Every structure is written in C-alpha cells, then in structure tokens.
Length: 168
Image 1: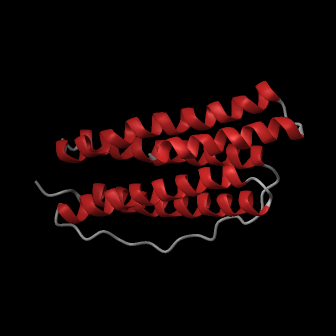
Image 2: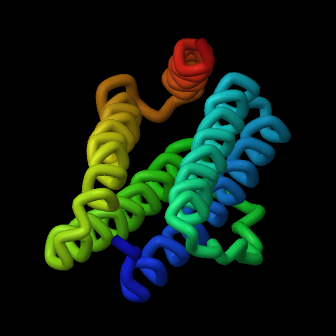
C-alpha cells in the first residue's frame, strides 16, 4: 500500500517541525551555557539531539515507503530568553504543538486505514505524552521551590541530572 499524498505532506511537515524543534532546543542550550546554567544547557543539548533523531525516524520511514522526504530549511530560532523558566514554558508550548501535529498524522492514518503509518506514529504519540509531562514537571518545580537564586540553582542541577539519565 502506497502512502497517500496527504499523509506524505503531513509527515514532511512533521520533519520540518522536528528540525525546527531541534534548532530551538539548541538555541536554548546555548543561552543556558552562556548565562551560567551549564547543567540546563546539557539538558537542552540532549533535547536538541533527541528532536533530530525524531526527524530522522520520519525521514527513514518515508524513504522506506519509497517516498522522497523533503529535507527542510529551518527557521531562525530565538536567540534571547528572559529566564530559565521562560525557556521551559516555551519548550512546553513547542511540545504541545508537536503533540497536535503527531495526533493529526495518527488521525489521518487511521481515517485512511493506513495501518503501517498508524503503527509507526504510535511510538510518537506515546513519546509526546512523556515530553509534555517532563516539561510540566519542570515547571512545577518553579512553583514548589520558588524563583530565587537558590531555587533556580537547584532546578538547574535537576535538569542536568535529567540530561545525564536520558543519555544512558
């Protein structure tokens, strides 16, 4: 069964979204590093690499279906952020947008009875639950610990340990 042009377009759009997400996380990582949040920088470098891996999964899926994937140019990510908390809020919003896009692909695949694509996309559906929960949990830490220098220091350490555990 050949993948439809509508699903091909949705997946190519997702490839672009994942590439942009990778660059956004890369910019966040650099901001963190420059502003003394090395551990958070490592966390966001890991997030950037993860998004690129997701992009490659979509590229490989399409090419494996005999469909030429579109390798996108990316948008210039923001280079300035107000705070570590604002970065985490932006990251959550980005993940929520990715979730909507993934769900759109899953819905389209199901509607078209393209079960190969539906099975492929299920991993991403599950992954997005984890990603949103991760950033919601981080943002809860600001409410629990506060926003003073010591609280930010602890959250920075927490992000660093989270990056270490996902690299293994």
